Image (cartoon, rainbow, N blue to C red; front, side, top):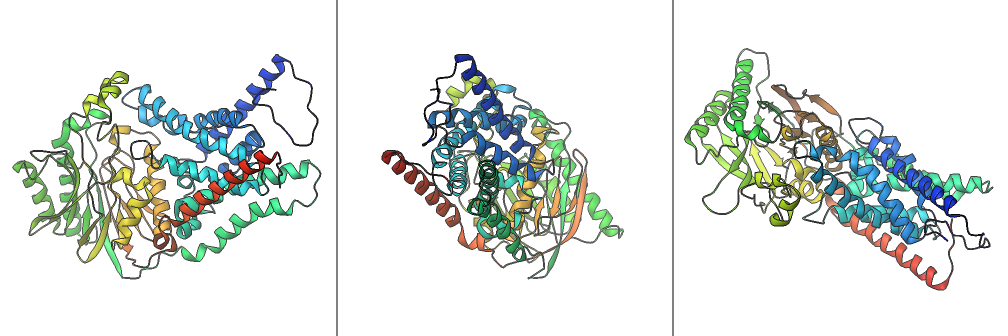
Length: 525
């Protein structure tokens, strides 16, 4: 019997199908698995089709139900590639297909291992619960390995417009992703039992109803009311001379663009066209000239900050005489100049530093564009700006649960996510990252401000709604009144414990399935 052939505990062994029939069945099953991954991709921004994640998991459940482990891995790989290849295509925007294909394959392999586990636990009672937990376990692995992890594509990040979003405030992205997967697998369990003639698949139906009910019950936790007053914030998008990897060759032009737009904001305030901000936020890489080392860059920034007359957070690259570079946010005061810094803690492998450079060079010479590696910071960043405590989560860090959570726990009343998406042009990357910030707003009950060099910059309220946003590759300044909040959501207080609990659930399911396999039994809901 083919490894892709379903097995049952009660049916007699069928006659061996012909080779042509086996190949045909294998192609159909693989196509369906790839389609489930494609549906997951389509559920992500910029499309507001979050609900497609449910039929995606239902279809994946159909593909994996009671499969042998090897078949589960193969079908899971097809699903992972169907998901990751289109989702991450932006990673090859300027460097060609090799990095994109390598990253998509690496992520798909981890998901394939998760799908192997899902196939194993589908022999258990209440299998959708165990299967959803195993999916979260696979996401937990992706968020940590290799090279510090790559959480992009967590199911939670596709749910910024979905009904399940309030669960982020309860248990963070792991619980949100678990609820979506559970509901999708539960839909398949219900449909399967109805097809088998069971008129009252009540237990299976609970795997659909419980996550939906939980999401509705969590809605009161989503609140955007001010607790510590409000602040008027300005987000500057200066734009870049051109998109792509070589935008940094115009570092002075990028700095001048942001300084010029800040001076224009000062003039608009003076003329009464804009309210006076309490502070201003520049994006990541808004000054890739080190102002501590280059007097001209220092003067340009200092003049712009003095013109607007309020503290400004500047995104810069610091180049110390020895050691790695630093991706740094600098708190710049109009009177005292630079007063505090925050160094990005989660730095991007193959973007800000090159692991295994000699090996990576065999696949792409573009690794040598990173001539000097960046080094990570050690502590969360919270700037006190005109009395408001602004937490810093720089670009790529927004994908990591601990980076945002630690910043809020350190006292942030609102969050800034300074970013630089110019390298990726007009791809979907910008919208995927914006959705992350919307989920983080609900998860921690904080307004999130997103200053980006080339767009999309945005002001996000604590309930996840986008109050204001810019167009891409357009100089702009967003000025908005935002609530300051200090209450911590359950997700903030619980930290990683919901994820640990789901990992334990996954381990329990896999252990139980192994025990049943050893005893030669398996039952389903």
